[in-house]
Image (cartoon, rainbow, N blue to C red):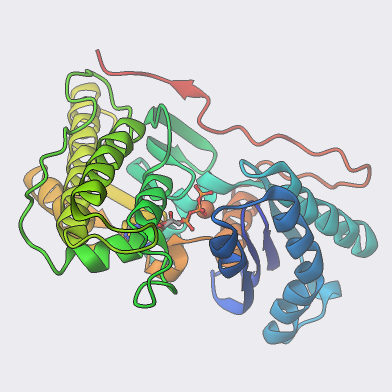
Length: 362
Ligand code: ATP
Ligand code: FE
């Protein structure tokens, strides 16, 4: 069986063809990052137009690279939520055109479920496992009980860590600096933080009094904002110039973000142990999303899993960020489990069930 996966939920137009063993036969990706970096953020109608301009080419490229024809596909799997409505719409309508033309089953995919299950493409991680998804748009802790069975333990009550890092990088004028201009905000902060191993700006770790597994990053960003404005005034620097203490600020931000994420994850592990939600032996923490490529955050999470006698698993960076492979893989797993499949002819599609049940720590 051959599955085509299509992803357009945010700013990447991506497609991939996988066979039922998870072998990647062909893949293609067009990133809009450069355009959005210039405009200082994603403008939805611009993203939509770029998806429209690229979807056909990207899908054809993935199919051609796989050496098959669209007729030979067994099904088309496409991200239907969550994401930007206008962007999702492009992938969905293109997919529906394909499934109608070639009479193929359509498998609607939940973007965050796909991120959570990507690890199973490469490693034999069995259910249930704990997942931490840290990206540009999300921050989620959940127990993955099965292919379509997620128990949400916590999420961000305001913004996502990647978004926070991107905004702080912009405040620090990193995005306009030649050394960092090709990097995402999170990468730029990691880079800068590596130059400084002291944490001299003490930032409050968010939600340390909250007895749940939720996250918050907005307050941290305003704390940092205040420090940046104060230092800019002290140094008398112009907008667009980098502060002399930018590396110290980056190191403190990275430290605080990492420790906040780690503390919430630790609470989730305690909760899972108390409720018997994870296997008593060989329990696994899977971490994915763009922010998971941060080496410092990984190191802290590694020490937490070591202490809890758990295994830490992270997909390689190219599979942590948005891609077509994870969508196709989720389609394969769903097809094999016989769930959530819709033979779509009317443009009506099944809403995937995801993260429905919510429980908090006491
Ligand atoms: P979502 O999956 O929630 O819809 P997204 O697809 O935009 O969001 P990703 O592509 O998974 O998010 O991740 C992008 C984010 O990861 C950016 O905000 C970026 O700053 C952050 N990021 C990338 N590399 C690093 C790094 N080394 N350290 C910290 N953050 C990073
Ligand atoms: Fe994503």
